[in-house]
Image 1 (cartoon, one colour):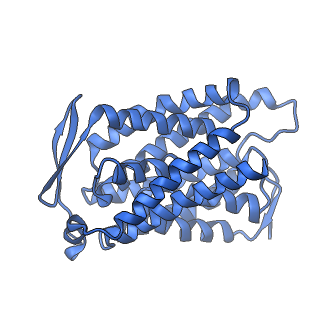
Image 2 (image 1 turned 180 degrees about the vertical axis):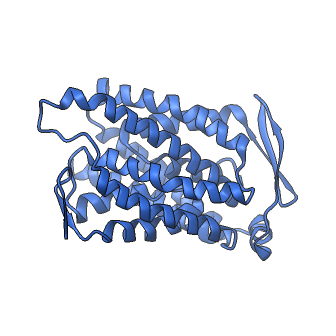
Length: 299
């Protein structure tokens, strides 16, 4: 057993890495880092309940995500127009969300109930999509072959070809979605990828195999911004007993396991049917939804 002084956690040195590896190897196939599942593990199982758990979770993202993004990039499966639009929208939303949380929304109960309803709807949409025919998924996993070709990227729309089929989405509405996700993430600490990836699949009808890299990259950069925010405000709480700084060692152990899992998940994604990936995304989204309902009920 190892004692982690910042978090007060006592656990085996291998447990955080094993848990992170198991979670991220599955969730990364859909563009979700797994942080939304690792946070409850830290709180409920390890007893890490101070505010420092949030930046520790963000530290996990920073260490774990690059390996998955690298794998998607190496295999030519990063849709860069989609990626840049998500990044440009998410980052300002994140800072705006932090300001809103501090100044205007000290009680997040009402919003959490609303967010739970929206996420529950998205989860159901994903589950319904699992039972529909998906020609793109069959093409994607046949021999593990992927062909993504950019077609268009301007202020009007984003377009790319995936395995011979063109897909288009409004640049403006993608930006607005990313901005809203950034605000929500900054205000209530929701993992951006856990929301934006299901939205891209259900609302914009983009192939699930093509959104994972972009969603992970957006989560990676927003996590860096989140850690910077915590680092900036930490000195203002130095006179209190409130722990704000991340548990660097614990976060690193989660991150190491997560990095291995992300790489494995990104490598396996091309061989997984879209139905399975949508099922994993639905599970993550529904988990957040149920968690928010419980938090609303118990106050």
